[in-house]
Length: 299
Image (cartoon, rainbow, N blue to C red):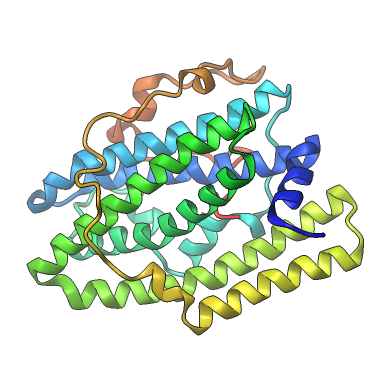
């Protein structure tokens, strides 16, 4: 019988599918870290109070990328090239969701509307990430390696979601409610389509790697389409609602360490990036070259 647990166990139990899974996840997290670092550097003067939270979000995303890369290294595996059709982050940008990378590469200060777009985009995509991490945690809570990594990432994603709720509600009370509602709706309706397409693309690649029979692929594809139908009919609304989070100031303070994952040697032939280069928004004005790992986390 097909279940989320059995499918994930197959994917994580095979080296080639595990490499693709972790490469997709690491690439998406790294890209999210770069985006948030650049946004923190460009926040308008009137919204500088947001900088610590956005900077913390960037640091968490970078940490998650290191965790997924470390999981590969612990198996003695290297990242793989990730097909562009599985690149959730890139596809969202191509559909006009979030702030364009060309804008973030520059030095021009953002506007308050840009901040609204960023937070609305984060509200939607972090909702997806939070749900996916909770599903993985349900499946692998007892696994000594995967479970520990997923638990840490899931906690961070919940904090990111609380932060988005809190800041969007603050901006809504300042008179930006109509713009927030419009951008949230646009983001959510686009995201569910992109998520469907990326999920089908990942299914296709995993199916070939694991040599799934056509009947199994068809059943899984039917499930993906069913989820999209539910979301299109109204499930998307969970991604646009706003409520006061139970935990306030969720992104106050530095990112929690992940020493057991992060302190791994870089693959042979690759120099380790200096810590201050990844942590400083000013040092990331040029978008990082896409490594073989770059893809989305939302697969």
